[in-house]
Image (cartoon, rainbow, N blue to C red; front, side):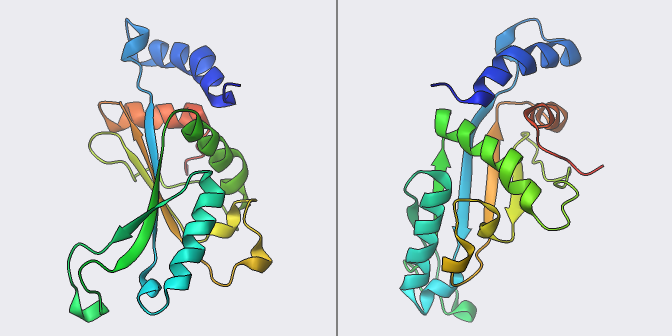
Length: 180
């Protein structure tokens, strides 16, 4: 079964974007390429079980097994040696990406306390959007009483848009609530 956001993209978003930006062809309309979810777990240096817990929670949230990320350089101030595990990440594409985007926008973001919208200025030059979440418990898959510690995550939404304006309009049409 196709995800709901794919249907919305094909039936609503493509015609709106063609109207707004005067595209001549449907293939010119920007689309989502991938969503990367990253958890940096610095405390894993003292206790590797914290990283295992973070990997399990990230797998529960995204529905895909995360890959372990290791330190590229040694940083003596943080007691990090080269090759130590310091985080985990998941790259979502196709149907899994659309399902995650749907849950993020419609379920998780509204559960944030005192939520007024996501910052509209977190785009890079190519039109990719990065968002930082301070806790993983906003996702309904995570049981709050079973999580020993609060863990944040970074979410990067990669698009094919050429600039920030196209990307912002695309994400707005997907339902991402930007601050006014």
